[in-house]
Image (tube, rainbow, N blue to C red; front, side, top):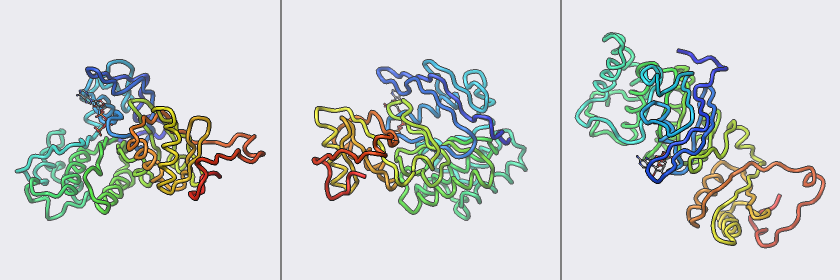
Length: 321
Ligand SMILES: Nc1ncnc2c1ncn2[C@@H]1O[C@H](COP(=O)(O)OP(=O)(O)OP(=O)(O)O)[C@@H](O)[C@H]1O
C-alpha cells in the first residue's frame, strides 16, 4: 500500500507514557510524513516506548495516537498488517535458518505459500543475505542478525516500517552498509521508514527528516537539510550546578569545537553533524542534563552590530562567528 504524500504516517497528540516512577513520554505531539524519518535521542529518551505504543504493543497513559490514520488501541491488528517492526534487541531463534524464519514470518502474515516463498527470497536478497540464509542464525555476526531482523520486518510488504536502533552493535563499515540498505527500503520498495538512533548525527545522510527526543519530550523536528546547515550554530541549555554552561563550553573547545557563552546558554558552531553527538557526549561526561538544543538564528541587531566579546571561551578553537 502506498501512503498518500499528504497523509501523515504517524501523528501523536499530548502522548504520555508513565512506567512506575518514570515518565518515558511527556506530552509528545508529533507528526511524521511519508519518507524516511530519524527519531534520535540518548538512551532512555523514549524512542522504543514510542514505537511500542505506535504498534499497539503498549498502552499509552494519556494522549492520542494515529498510525496510517488508525488508532493502535482499536486497530492494532490492522496496523500490524501494514507496518513492519525491527526490534532493538536480538530476538532471532538461534537454531533456525534466516530462510526458514523469514518464510515463516511471511506465512504468518497471511501471504499464500508461493507468494511467501517469493517475497522471502526477494527481501533476503535485498538485505544481502545470500548463501548464509541457509545457515542457523545462532552463528551469525551482529551485522547478519540485523539484516535478518530487517528482512522479517519487510517480508509482508508493509507501507511503513519501524526500525529500532538498526545500527546497534555494528562496526563503522557495517553501519554504513545498513544505512544504505535502509535508504533503499524507501527508494526500491516505496516503504516509509521510521528509524531510531541514540547518535544524533548518524541518520543525517539517510533521513529526510529528524525528530529529536529528550526525556520523552520533543526537542526538535525539522528537515535534515535545515538541521545540518553548515554555517549554523545551536544554542545549548544545560541543567546543572552554577557554571555548568562554562564547563560545557570549555569541554567543547577542548574537542576543537567553536563554543561561546550567551546569557547562561552555550552557543556552539555546528559545522559538521558529529558536533551534535559531541555536545551530547560532553554533557553526559560532565553529568549535565541537556534541556534544550535549538538552532540559533541571527537577530537583526546581530546582523548589524558586531557580537559582544566573550573572553573566557573565545580561544584558539575559533569560538565566535
Ligand atoms: N518496562 C519498563 N518499566 C519501567 N521503566 C521503563 C520500562 N521501559 C522503559 N523504561 C524507562 O523509560 C524510559 C524510556 O525508555 P525507552 O526504552 O523508551 O528509551 P529509548 O530512547 O528507546 O532508549 P534505549 O535505546 O536505551 O532503549 C527510560 O528511563 C527507561 O528506563
